Length: 142
Image (cartoon, rainbow, N blue to C red; front, side):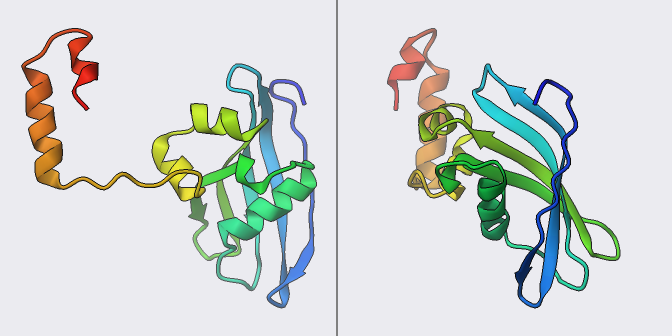
């Protein structure tokens, strides 16, 4: 799709006795970040919420993506009264692009990277060491 082209897809799949319908709005191809981005509306009447893993599979089928891990979904809000959720979705052209452009926490959520565990004290000590330095020397303290 072109920038701003609105595409509507309906995917109905039987799962946990009720179906859910996916619709994409404001679909655009972002060449600079090598991804497609859109607002995702999920209609799931009679059903609490749809897990992101399931939505990821359906979107991968819908837009024939080779690897489910290239699909990133976040920011879902369920409408008052239930039955409809709206969130944001990105489909990266490949895993490398995803690792390069996605925020670290979303890459970790997708399971492509391990979370770096540091104690609060370590983090604060590092911050204070960095405060004393100027310029590119800051990058060296890791």
